[in-house]
Image (cartoon, rainbow, N blue to C red; front, side):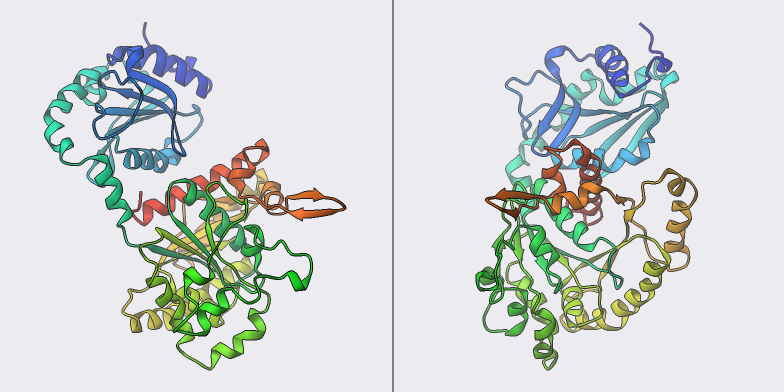
Length: 460
């Protein structure tokens, strides 16, 4: 039966009419060689088809060659889904990926550490291009390729691949902007949560006197000052002395914030008053970097939530960082602060890093954050605001966008009643979304951000 793309009016019909009823049978896959709605850790695949039957279902180094198939709504631009498919192929060590919205069909191939487009056609051309598609992802083609690669596959078991990833050098990301109120804490905590759900060992450092990340990860439970168990053990104490108070002495685990929980270096409101003690000593600016070096095999990624300032705490954070993400609502006041950020990095931070023998700070990009969901704004002004970042300030712009939504404040301010009191019970947006569907869009935005960050740091 020929395929008619006009009959695919939504994502469900792309799945059923193009993939299930047409492509899978035409490519030679039988019901015992493909699976729908596959969950592998935090990854959710629409379809996974194998060259040979796999029972029981498992993905490892000995599995036959396979192809991931992802279906999207006919109105969706496939360019917006490439990063996620790339993450799936590299994370699962799957060689081929098919991405389609019914109107267009693309095939990607994993080549060493990269993923490249190897075939594309319109939905209307699928019948005449079927043989070309079979050459790439037909079951017979995969079986032949499996025979040719069996020796190489046996030399690289999945456990070795996993161990090699664990041996990657720890990467540290500062979330920083000179302007306050741009969503730094929201980005820091939820990016940390999203990366943790992708199997990364994450350390979150709060070095802002407002201690918003400390609160948001559930570490502020006390009601009275005498119960304050953070005052004498927080990020200040890492910077205070070189010979004691190392990260394992200060670190805590978040409290019911995310599954899995993340490690946190808390902050405290007394950072402002104590900063004068540190300013006297130039070494204070490099102590965080030096102490992070001692735990570089304990974590994959470190996220630092910074103050909206040009003070010693910001300097210590950026000196310790390898990468910088600059959240911005793209409004004029926020944009005006970008010049200060650039000068701070160029004149202070990179000089500090050179003294430590570390390469200059890499700016991953300006991240559109707290962006209005108003349709008129998105239609007429958003693209103009984004162009200012690259054209006037000559800074890279990240592909991900974090919209301003009620769920992002609701998850941080969640409480549970205890007697006549409401006890803080903050959650990451990803865990919050499991019980509140209204948070799903925000959770997806942070999942996409995590994928983009891992891709740009070459850590998939």
